[in-house]
Length: 113
Image (cartoon, rainbow, N blue to C red; front, side, top):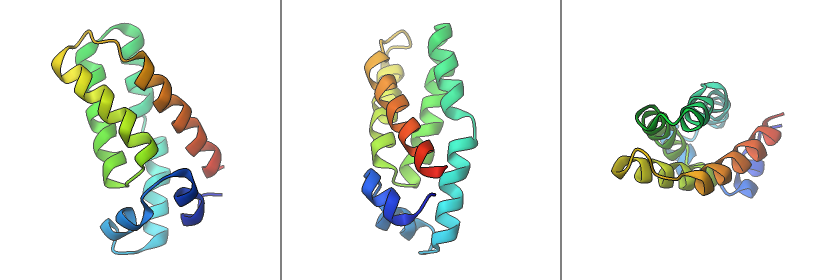
């Protein structure tokens, strides 16, 4: 079950994330759940696999914004790295940060179960 304590232990900056949500825990947790189901991670993975740097950049940039606003640091950092690599080179190798993002994504999904 997704809780503030579980997110804090995961490495999220819950104080900052909650602050953006007027300290409304249920709203913040709902937004985290929505982020997990919005499809941006899947779009990013599919675009990278297809070699579509433009679509990968757009998905990574979108994901970076959501993760940053929710202060989900373990996910935000690799999403940010992917975004910046693709911003300067649409054919950049994003294998390492994408694998880190995938690992952290799965860890967060497990917390949400």
